[in-house]
Length: 404
Image (tube, rainbow, N blue to C red; front, side, top):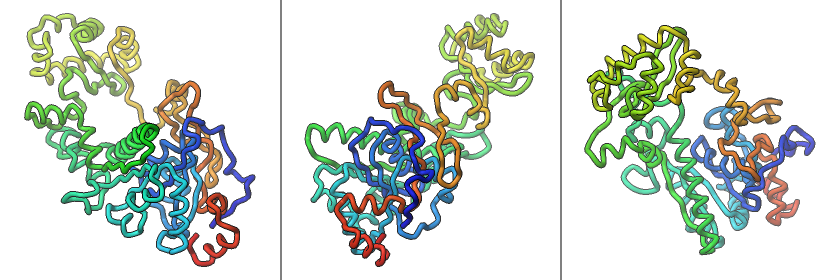
């Protein structure tokens, strides 16, 4: 149980948000989906307590000093507890009585075996909001399968519509199922908090990587459910809005999104190809869809006569959506990204001065800040156990038994 000096680099880097002051969240999560959920509360000022094993085992996704852990676990306190130890479990139950929210992403049966499931904890805390994130749901034929983002991307249909036709299924470059499951869990908790203000009662919230991934199919799923249309891979081309996609220029590539007849007319005029507006192959949206490849070749032939910057200036000036295709370094060098504060400074305990990804929401009175870096394992154990009424002797006994 680590007890660093209070004047260490753990001191606040910025004032925390006050939006969720007074809420206590117990974080039992690992990997990514659960920490993504909990981060939404930590970044808006809730008291988030990360419950960890007394022995700082290797973290899923890399060490505590790694970018992944640092980005997911800021603005939290850390308490080490062995939930298989009688004293550790008792301390957790006592702490759970003070909690507004508990978030976990164990496999479905684990929490019941540990005695930390919603039914058990809500008996002594009826206002408790308990969120569970799993791979495939808390029950059903696949509930016990281990969940992983790429598995959900495949089973949830995303890989069948991602990538270039004929080259096989392709995952997307971020853990979309993990991230969305976490965000949906956070949304469910917020809904439950609003409802609790009226009823005074908590509830159990469940989501999974599979549910999140299927929901995120959005209009592609609706095409199947309503019309029986099974979408296929379209590469960089938009499946229904044409011409929308990636096009070559004289010095690279750019994105262009031409939607609706008015934008189509502006686009044709900017490229000096007004004849497209009367050409029967391109004059209507259905015709452009039928002749997508021929139109794309003609567009590229024109765009390759000048630079990406040249075309973006002309097209955006005329109201035609167009943009650069940046690598990650270029993203954070982009003046608009800097202006929006998406990279926020923090003094990491392991890395020193660095930056993490900030929240993509701007609030006029209670903005989010990265107020503290990720905690050391057990950094706040004595502080938290004291808050729930344990004496220094009891805490020392817990330490001696390996409970904390």
